Each structure stands twice: as structure tokens, then as C-alpha cells.
Image 1 (tube, rainbow, N blue to C red):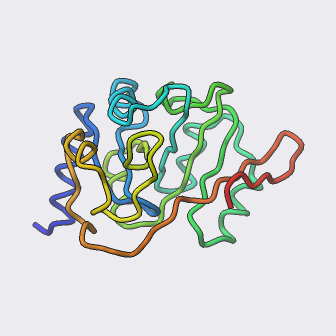
Image 2 (cartoon, rainbow, N blue to C red):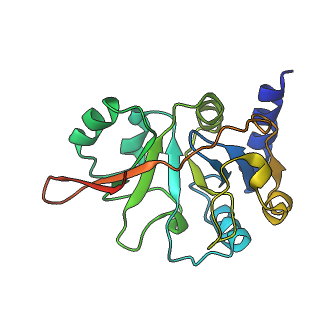
Image 3 (tube, rainbow, N blue to C red):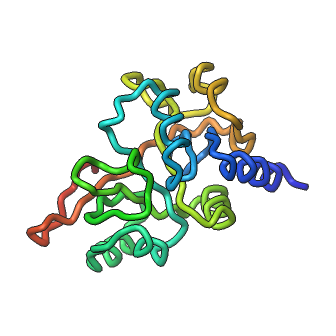
Length: 190
């Protein structure tokens, strides 16, 4: 069994039992869990020492998944995303089926379609979206490589993915956009 496959197997075992993982995403290293499991989401808030008033990003493997968790997807979003190459998180109105801890107080959800092989495979095999939040204690800078992740985070998760740990390429968070009620695109983070 390859290291990639072993990591997928170990992550699935943890995620299926409500655990949390430290894993590489299509942007930065993230702390993740099943985005539909409120108890798992609460564990992430506790580990990050983060206020539960802040929402978290949800990762899905393809655009066909989005209508399962969003009641009002704006079709313009899909056309926009197809034309860009940078990972982009979209804030959607009318979220359903996700743990309350990942939603904003206004009921919106921040969702990103991943293209990175590990994330995509993990989400597809889990059959549910993943939470992704930066691998840092709240208020501290997000680490750009695995070696910069605080030991408290590494020790606080139920499984640390081995895949891509040796990479030293500096990574960046995703862009964040929202299609407003006015029908206009709003860029929140370029």
C-alpha cells in the first residue's frame, strides 16, 4: 500500500468516528473533519482556541456536490470558477446539511471545490465534505509549510497525514468571493 493510500485509509477511519485530521489541502495545511459532524467541528474550535462565532471553509470534490448543501446556488458562480486557476472559496447563501459550526451567523457557507489529488480522493471516499481551517492557534499566522505548524496542533489532532510533509513550497490561502443579492461579484480576498 502506498503512503498516499495509507493516509487516505487512516483519515477515513478517524473521520468516520468524529475525529479531526491535519492534512494538506489545495492551499495551506489544514485541520479538518467531516463538515456534517457538529461534535467534530467543536473539537476543531477547541484545538484552535477559536471563537465559535467564526465560520470555517468547507471543501467539496466537485461542483455537482454543491446543490446538496446549498439551496440557492447562483449559476454565475460556476462559470466564474471555471475561468480561474487559483483556488477560490465562494460564500453561498442558504446552506443546509452542514454542521452549524461551519456556517456564518447569516446562514451562509464558504465552500471551495478542490482540485488537489489527496483532498479530492479523501472527500470522494468519505462521501461528505470536509472542514478546512488553517493549522494554527487562532490569532497566530497560518503556517505556509508543514514544518511551521505548532506542535500543539500536531499533537491535538487524531491523525497527521504524512503525504506532502516534506514540501517546502510556500503556499497561500484561497481567494474568497461572494455573489451579492445585487447580482454582483464581490471579491473579499483576492
